[in-house]
Length: 401
Image (cartoon, rainbow, N blue to C red; front, side, top):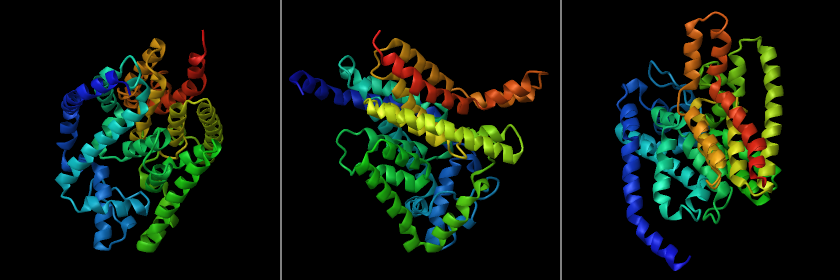
């Protein structure tokens, strides 16, 4: 680091303080809106996590309970998540809400810091890094999948932060792969990163991630064996525990197909074929991106695979769009890429799928049903388009003119 860079760094500490306060002020309306919701509508998923931990403390079966009416939500995560949720159960409900909400934004900050590193550390913007970081933080906080993290008290952005940090940190102080293993043990879908590590031959990271996931998966069999058995041999096999699979909020490939209301067998066959094709295309693109040094693009693609290939992927699972935006922006010098990123950002800020629901309800002859269903699947179809964008279009933008 040069003496000039040292002076810039020394002058920036106050800027980071101002930016932190500005970001807090910018997200305050979101936090106020969701934390003042009626009790039965406030951070309902956090309530599920916390109650799962409470069941363990009381020695009651974790997978037999549901939260009180009208939500009636069961605990759907692996048993290691319930063990970790014991810490939440030890807090008051009010304290848990604030701790979790702050944690959501801390995880978003970690994700933004790692994902937009090329922009923040670039020679043109380094001295403005705090201000650029703050602008990106606020923009990402208003994405619908991120807004839903606070609305429901969801864990997705934390899992995104773990996987991104594990993949792109230059010199991690933890064993690389451990965070992916932790994320996989907590919510299974980050397990797509094990496939990524395998096909890119990152053997040491793959073995560490696999080892961590295996240890954290087997540990509950020694501590809470009945709950572990209940999950792996019963609860996991019941997709209806996750909610109505045909609901608009399920933007996975399977969710989009279910909403066509074709025969179950036909839907299942088409789903398997489409998932195989999308998985082949996406993972092949991730492998090529990794080989050409575009590790962030590879991570973004694998994150999209976690959403699209899962049987159920709610809108808040699309927290991966933060990483996708960073991959599109790159180093921030290509104006075309910046405009595309702005368009993608806007698309995931507005409630596109719910516009589709409204369009279907309008009952316009010859228009509402078909167009409404397309718009209703907007975020899932958008994710498919983003896979194509990251695999096919961005590499062409990198080619010299």
